[in-house]
Length: 221
Image (cartoon, rainbow, N blue to C red):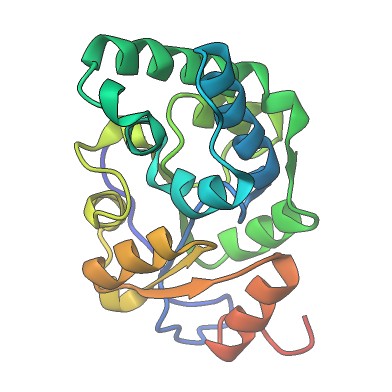
């Protein structure tokens, strides 16, 4: 989304809210996709004739993005092979589109986002690339996020703070008036560097509890 978004700072009824904008990671927060992402990378390595990284290794490292993951787990003798890396990266992007239908939204996330949309600006900040916009359409998130930042929009994806800072710039919101929900250390690192309060969550219930603690949702909701 181009341009800037003006975030309201009041609920209906003129209750002043300190949190103006809420940012969300995609994989593992908005989409139930972590296991599918592991299978994707393992398939790419196998297709190119390499032993696939373990599930544990990929769960730890893959949130840093495709290019970083491919470089990390290639054999030492291939780490300087830029042509190979580009071929594997292109295949990863192909599979990320093909495997979208294996994913699903986190249970209850769309309803929660629509509720929050009534009083806050919302942003999606992800290391996923162009499949992000396809996923938004596929799972009915059109119009929910005021700003969408993918790895294609920045020079340095998370754990760099660049994606979060770009989202805040487009929302015209200071870091002190935003929350960021992620699920991995890469999100925590990026949020801390951007000066945004960052909360790691596992499901929608944990998001709701955090929002209640921050005074964004009533305890009864």
